[in-house]
Every structure is written in C-alpha cells, then in structure tokens.
Length: 281
Length: 291
Image 1 (cartoon, rainbow over the protein chains, first blue to last red):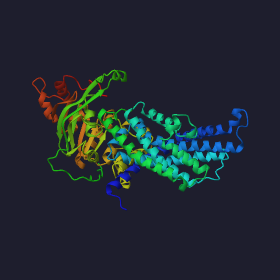
Image 2 (image 1 turned 90 degrees about the horizontal axis):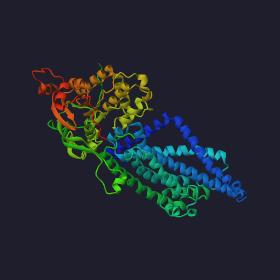
Image 3 (image 1 turned 180 degrees about the vertical axis):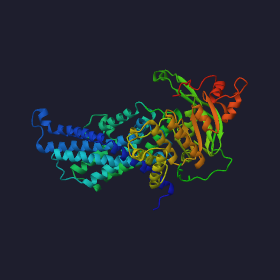
Image 4 (image 1 turned 30 degrees about the horizontal axis):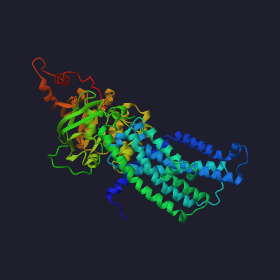
C-alpha cells in the first residue's frame, strides 16, 4: 500500500525527533550511566524486600518456594514499572526538555503536525524504554536466581508492547502540564506517575489493596499490563489465554492516543493565546 | 564571495499584488489573572493588563527588508511571534503571502522561519545535529541538507572542525550565525529576524548584516528585521516602522522618516533624532516587557 505524499512527509519528519533524541542520549551518555545505576539500585532494593521477609517478621513465615515466588512477583513489578515509567517520562518530558534547552518555540514553529512530533517521541520512548529495561533485567537475573521456567516471553512482550500505547497516550496528556505551567509543570507530571505506581499493582496485587485504591486500579491501564505480564512470566499464560487483556489494552490505547493529542492541542491553543510558549521556566 | 546554494521553495508564487506580509488591525493583550484566593472570592478581574500590540496595520512587499524599530518591551517580538504562529492575535488578521496565520497555520509555517535574539539550540548537540533536526522537520532531503549545512556554515565563517562539536563550546556570535544558517536552510520566503545582531561583536555583526543582504538579493526572500539598532535599520531596511507602546507611530523609508522631522534647526536628522521626535524619548529607554 502506498502512503500519500503528505503522510510520507510526516512520517519522515517524525524521524527528526527520533534522531534528535538518539543524539541527545549519546551526548548525555554519562547521565545515562547514572540513570541505569539508579534504576538498578532501586530495583534491587525492592526485590531484596522479598528475600528479607523472614528476617523482618522474626520467623520462617515463608518457605523458599514462596520467597522465590515473591521475588519474581516484585522483580516483574519493578521491571515492568520501570519500562512504563521510562515510556511515560520520555513522552511527557518532550516539552520539559525543550523548555530547559530553550528550543520550544523553534520546534512549535516548524511545519510538522503535533501528532507527528508525538509519534516520533513515542517511537523513541518505546525503543529506549525496552533497551533500558533489558539492561536492568540482565543485572537482576545475574543477582537473583529467578525461576522463569514457565514463562511465555512472546505473550509477555505482546502485553508490554500493546500496553505501552496507553501509557504513551497518558504521557501526551501529561506533557500538557509543562506546556501550561513552565515553572512547575514537569514536577506535576511526577504526581501522575506516583498515582499510577500506587494504584496499578506494581508491588501489591490490586485485589489485596485497600479501598479506594483497589477500585481505582481498575481504571489504570498499567494494572492490566503488569498483571498480564505476571500471568505470562509466572504462570506461562499464552497470547490465546491473554487475548481479553490484549484486546482491552489495544482498545484503551487506541482511545487514549487521540484523547491525549486532543487534550494537548487544547493546551497548545491556550499557550499560544496566553504567550506561555515564550517563558522558559 | 561564494554564493550560497539554495533549494527552490516548493511554493508557487501568488499574484504579484499579494503582499508578502499583511498585518491588519492586529491586537495582542497579555493579562495575568488574579490569585486563586481572589478567584475563589469571585474576583476574576485581571491583576495586570499589558497591550503588547495595539491595532497594528502594515503591509510588506515581496523582496523588501522591512524594519521594525523600537526599544525593548515595546511589542516588536510579540509582533514577530504573531507572524511566526507562536502567538494567536486577540483580534485583527495576519496573512503571509495571502495565507492566514490562524486558518492556514500549516501552510504559513512552510513559508517562514525565524531567528530570535537568543540562539536556541540543544547545547550538547553539534551544529550539524541541531541543523539536521531542523532540516528533517522542514522536509529537507537529509543528504542534501548535510552538504548545504557545511556550505552555509563555512560561508558564515564557522570552521569545519566546529561543525561536529557541541554548541556549548561556541561563542554567542558563532551560535547566532548557526541560528541564521538554520533558518536559511529551510529556504523560507519570509524570514523573521528578531534582533539577530544583538550582543555580537562588530565584525560578526557586519558578517550577519552582509548575509542578510545576500539572502534578500540572491534568494528573493522577504525579510522582517526587528531591531533597536538605528544604524543597522538605516543601512539594511527598505522601509521602517517605528513602534512605541505597541503602536506603529511612523512608517516610511529611512530617508522618508528623516524628512518627517527635518527642520532648519535639524537639517540632517538621524534615525535616533526621528525616534526622539516621534516618541519623546530615546530608544535606550526600555519599556517593561509584557509577560
């Protein structure tokens, strides 16, 4: 199928954002090393909680099999959340970074659709998030003896990939905050992230959470991504078994992307009316 | 002097009578709202109101270098941002080659580019990386863009060895030249220059001014030049609009403006004299910047 010239032009333009972000990542390589070390330390700290359960309660509350299961449960939560957080942050930071560098007016004056801008940023975020998480995964596997014998990696990858679309949509909505609030908008996106980590069953099963968190977990797409990946990696659920989850995530993603772009376009019009593109924060 | 190679813009010129830029009754007011506590008490009256652009109208013909002269904070940059689609006017219309900046925003964006007073770049990226980012956004073929980037930057006096080094290692003057190269790379037919030589040393300033003339003469671009440098405006501009408190107080050729205030006591006025006579103050007296 041939793409229309306008669509081809937009697709080529979207690579501007991929290439720019690759160059920025390369130029800030020192920061990337620090970021990986920080993530590894955080993930190891979470997983170590499982290994120290018996010591914490002062008795052998869990046997070795149960501790291994808890290690796996928390490790998957930490890793999947790290991936989703990187995707969310990269998309929502597309405005913060431009404000910091002072390039926001140049980018917004360019003849590219905002959706093109976002597609380029989202594609980069998915690849970057995957590579970043893979590094952390290798280190966790080396440190802990994870039992992944039942895992269906293909099903887990599908859940991760399709689930990412929803997070991109939420990230686009989050990006409107630094657009409207130059001074504190970037920090405000962290509130969204913290809320998602709280209600999405990252470190606790949603049905074990107190109300109203348990009810709120139902509306978070991340709940289904993390749950689906746990089902695939711990219980070995296949794509066929997980198809309701995959379909739900796909539909949610398809809805959240245009909603995100729509919310952002309203924010952009407001920023142009009030002169908020100018201020660098 | 080597001549720059430039792509022909993918644009069919409108009929000769269509101005390159038509600003009609443009108004832009900035307000800062009351605090949240005041709003909760029902007070929605803005606490501060600045009229940045006040019923401004003018037309610029194709191929002109049109100067907008005024002190800092008088609305020059706001006017440029309105043309650049970075702000929306509260009322009035702005058309670039007959295309409205609000209704035909995408089409206008393809015709224009802008150099602002601050060269805004990703500072860790090199000139090549920054300009390739711009080239891709403007749909310039990447292979051609790489050749043209080297050609334009070396023409502007930037050494080849600096083209791959981070922007943060360059002086402000060099960065401003890269900003001009970036704008020129997209072959705009309307180039918006917002104080492009502010803060540059005299040599760099002359180089940039020569380049501006070359862009107009060799590449048929129309140029809007915002400045508070009287000498620069006098030397470069075909016509000048003097702006004060968001209003155009006079618009004519540099010679025409001088004629306006010439008298027996002041037979050979400068543009500074013109500004003083028309506004009652010197151009160095900054006005509070609209937020």
